[in-house]
Image (cartoon, rainbow, N blue to C red; front, side):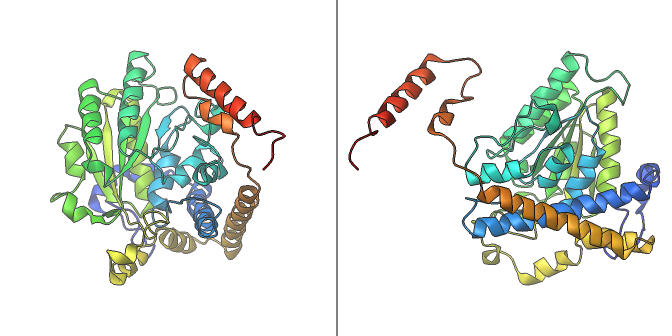
Length: 367
């Protein structure tokens, strides 16, 4: 389903009508914010790729082309919700309050996690998951806890809590994801499974992984599921908003397959020219989510000064990110012992003491 055609015209498909009221409620400021979110994070993402190419980051997973799916769903969350990302949800993090430079610190290797998920300033957003698929289990367990604690299912959308977990088409083939759905369906969790189908699990096309649309996998567990145009930010917002509210108020888990495309490489260690054609990439470039939303706003009378202001904000974020990254210092050696256990642990204490003694043995000695 979709609301916006690739040329930016507003043409809801028939299955978009149940969500029409949600989109109609968006005023000019809210629509402009959706565009701003996408354009600014793309500028940041581009700068991060440059930083990696210049040796300032060990790795970078670009989000180029997937901005609409991320921005729409993140703006659909409510402040009390919990977010479990994968490792490409840069726009989601920024919307929820996480400083995106913390992601750069993670990719630079100066931090073990990047940010404190218990800090309210980070919008109840969990850490990036590099062991793909596990985040769906974590999210389901957390959502089960919300039910057990009475923090969901009361019918109050402004107080009830929900969980949204992001994963990709590659992770959709992992056992963890299916186990998470089994438990989510069995325990009626207040949870949204948000699948970003970007067509490629590194070099494996989705056609190799599934002979039917991926949305049918979640539906097979009895989870109400919707397949939408992941390059349409309005569709992503409207469906996510409705499904999250249905989940939080006792409706049980929901699922979305956002059909999008990874215009960039899987990560900066990947070369997509080895496994996909330029023709395929060009066909998806014509469906660019930012260009689509820009055309829509221009048709509504958005001014050139607005777009110039957005461009300036994106450039400012990129410059700030570069300045802060190149000034980052490496972690202290004893940081490897922190956060291994919640409480002090004798093994960690012995190892830390040994390292300190070992390093001290070099002090004052000859090189």
